[in-house]
Length: 258
Ligand SMILES: Nc1nc2c(c(=O)[nH]1)N[C@H]1C(S)=C(S)[C@@H](COP(=O)(O)O)O[C@H]1N2
Ligand SMILES: [Mo]
Image (tube, rainbow, N blue to C red):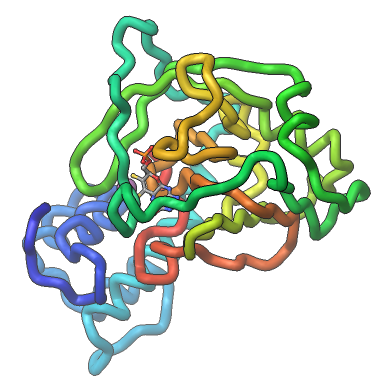
């Protein structure tokens, strides 16, 4: 892991700067990366009212929020993330979380229920047996982690768009929020939730997800960075307010598209 100077607890400032710089106009991007761009110029670029006296930390947050708006606008709901042949699948698939693999949640599949709530008609818990009966789709796609590694996985499950329609979700709502069995959570925007490759994943390599891979449910979003792919899902909610997420709340760029 790189150990560059942190301005936000738990967040690599170097990575955040590179990320936020991506969508600045080319001319200002170079200046921004050299650290020569003033906070005043940042205020102009971001269209937000930050002035002298504000910390660089706040400026980065503002640019990051600005980028969310730009990225959401640029996001094409039909553009597909690259798919790979099964021969390229990384086995074993690497484990990553904010804790060690030994501390991963242990979930009993027999008593497990997926809570579905918020703006949905069918506000009821789902058993795994019910979920395993839903129409299955498969994808071989790459998971890209901001920490500087990536791996290709073979994922099977239900299209999240299919599941949302099945539970009578309000598809005009802004967000879908996921709660995990650890202290993790994520909020994603509705266009991303409805993207054809966004998957409620139940299997890896056509076998039920092992504990280390996020049993019993993970959400695969190949158009997003790894941290926007929650594992060990226990609840989801369709809603109009942004409930944030584990890393988003610590300053990671909310949209984090690829
Ligand atoms: N519940 C939960 N989901 C999570 C995380 C976590 O700590 N807890 N880490 C995220 C991060 S940062 C990455 S890169 C991927 C890693 O997925 P993997 O363990 O299958 O490689 O899971 C994401 N989803
Ligand atoms: Mo990650």
